[in-house]
Image (cartoon, rainbow, N blue to C red; front, side):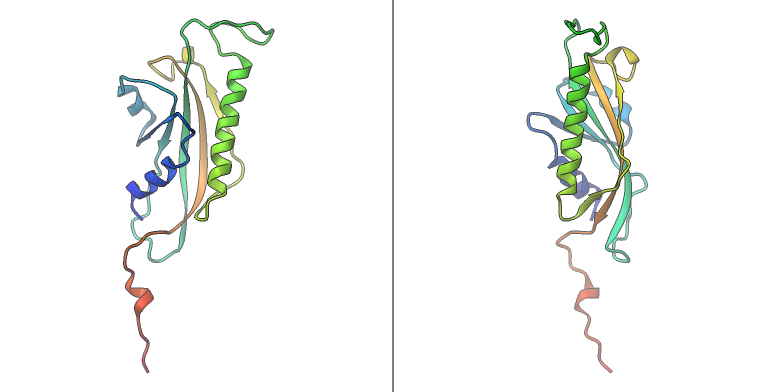
Length: 160
């Protein structure tokens, strides 16, 4: 299992019509000039190098969900105040994150460990240089080793 394969597996859980980004630090995404709805994975660091001694590892990582919003937003409810995001947008972001994590848990080789919570950042909060709102979801996943590489430990013949 290498880091690129790991990122490709996580990318497969990206919501429909969203882009995927993998980075070492959250700030790397701000270098991108074209912005859309984006699921950003901050990949695990440290990342296991030798998977042969165990069949699974607990990996700490973060998923960021960035939703493109209009610069001038209309608010109609009592709990919505410009320039901050409406409650419906925040609730929708949490629902998207919940769906992604649930889909990851339905996988044969990923288990998201409990106690997952998210932190919401509005555009004016300074977490982004563009017009996206962000939901940060740090997670710990139990990731089981998969791959098609040859492992000589499986093919040994023991003779006496």
